[in-house]
Image 1: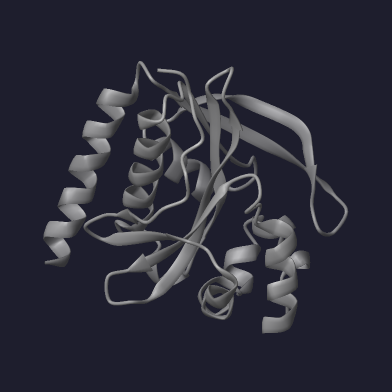
Image 2: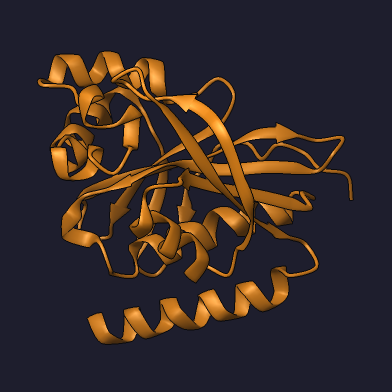
Length: 203
């Protein structure tokens, strides 16, 4: 099938629910991720770009989250807690390419099943809509994010040098990873098994 951008919709998992991000969600998102601990790893341009108030965060969100060009999700636990955000975007239908990024979570859910299931849901959405390659990337200096991407089953492609300017004016290199449709069945099975282990432990 030819690739087609999926319409934004709720993606339901066993651990998380991905809900298209709305303005009304932004105060709760600020409480979840508006910390130096999140931004110092490079998110939002680095700690120099950390909003210092809810009002500043709303302005940041309107600039940073590309709701016109991507499916921007709030990541919710089933108890109703908003714990982060991630985006499926950069849809290139003729080349069957998409990009998962702009991801940040509250440190309270780092190392849990939140990220694996969020990525499983978004990858499924992309491949089910005909995309053949999904890119993921991180600041080349961000060892924690790079390890998390690799653990998803994504293959390291290389480093794009001087890829993006940070909030402090310096330039970051981007470590680029991807998953292609030929790899997806094995990646999906491994991710589903990881998520099941987390869900079982939580239950």
